[in-house]
Amino acid sequence: MAVFTGSGVALVTPMKQDGAVDYPKLNELVEWQVNEGINAIVACGTTGEASTLDDEEHVSVIETVVKKVDGRTPVIAGTGSNNTQHGIHLAKEAERVGADVLLVVTPYYNKATKKSLVAHYEAISNNTSLPIILYSVASRTGMNLNYEMVKELKQIPNVVGIKEASGNIAQIVEIAQLVDKDFALYSGNDDQVLPLLAVGGSGVISTISNILPKETAQMVDDFLNRDIENAKTTQLKQFPLIKALFAEVNPVPVKAAVSLLGKCELSYRLPLAAPEAETFDQLKSQMTAYGLL
Image (cartoon, rainbow, N blue to C red; front, side):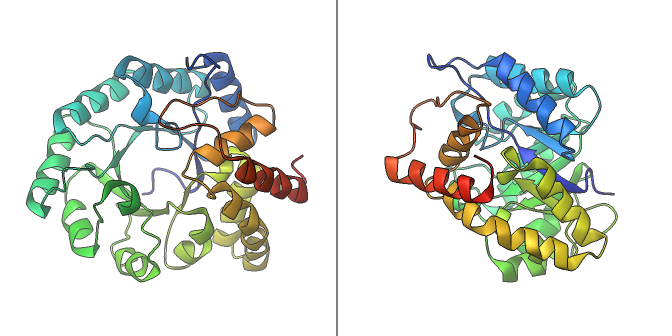
């Protein structure tokens, strides 16, 4: 059974101008997302700038989200690392503070072999009782989870799904053959949600849901309830805005978009910084055209 069906938001981590995590704004964002009907919240994913949070902040952000959600929707904690022991530590901490699911990206930079990759996920699985969603995003990590790898990783007891962000439709279709009652497929790309749903996916772990939570969740719900035309209209309508949200590396534009909505400050941690003026203008133009501004 899928740990969630619909749209899960890969939530930004709001920060103050001095770079500190803005916990009041984080609480406000979580409450807004829940009230808008989001189907899951990912804390400390790529979009949440997890790579520049220290461990204390990382766990604190997850705990803050868990407490604010208060059981109203699943909380998925990003706990991936290229250091297996560090990944185990984060997994244990996420479980301790009440996360429902772990999102574990492939170990970046190290370029693990298939054998050592399986050992990496087995080691994490052996140290937590929480379900694990694999995260495959080779453009970030240099490591692609192909069909054969996913087929083997699927045998690990805690592994219950994959966030597939390769952008390769042929690979997505192949991996979709592994979907069953114990293994779910989620889109990691907002511009490919409907194609993935069409081959048996359960939803999306979404960036655009940071600014369009209700509509994105409704799009998935429409498709799964066979209102294909409505879902298609939404997917196509979102496309120009999605392009603007990825005009620079994620989460730079989407955090700017959230700030334009007045829901966080325009503040990042280096090596990320505010978007170029051209990107910001493009984003503002598309958000205005969409009726968000």
